[in-house]
Amino acid sequence: MKIALCGPGECGKDDGALFLARVSSLRFESINTSWFARHIVCAALARAPYFLTYDNADVCWEDRRNHRKAWFDIMDSAAKSDPVGFFLPCIDGQDILVGMRRRRDCDALKRAGIIDHWIYIDRPGKSESQDSLEITPADCDRTILNDGSLDEYHDKLAALAAEWQILRQDAAVLHREVPHAEPSFEDASRDARCS
Image (cartoon, rainbow, N blue to C red):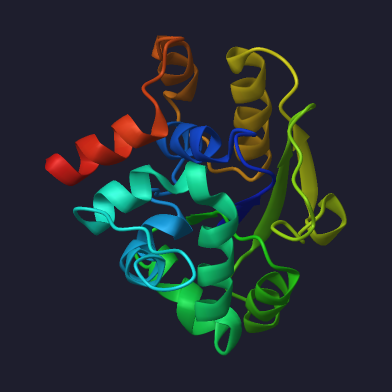
């Protein structure tokens, strides 16, 4: 089973993917689509009209939130001619795709039958212009509202995994053992790269 988590920035997609990987049979390597595109984006940012230079692509990726529109434009251009070819490496060896933003890409992956479930993560107060996020709840199979505590959000995700019959037997223990102060996505990605 492969799923896609879509939604505005900072709504909990990365945390949701990490949680689902911990309590279900889904695999996720703490890597979103921007991680796979970091070399492409870093090279493009060094040229006009941006002229931004970084020590390496990893540093560039860590600074992506400061240049969200530029990252979107560059990744959009790279995916335009072959969305399936662009996104397939992002889910190779994984079951969760995080960060798709264009309806064109969503439609291409739907036609190819690559993603089984499309989930929109919504969080009050977190929205983006349709210039950088075209996918809406209407494009997805289900919307999960991340409007409470971290435990409440995780409960909703665990219920979804149970509905899909992929929840691990020890999920209840794993769910409640997780400390409330989760490491940031950047910390988790850095730890995964260093090990």
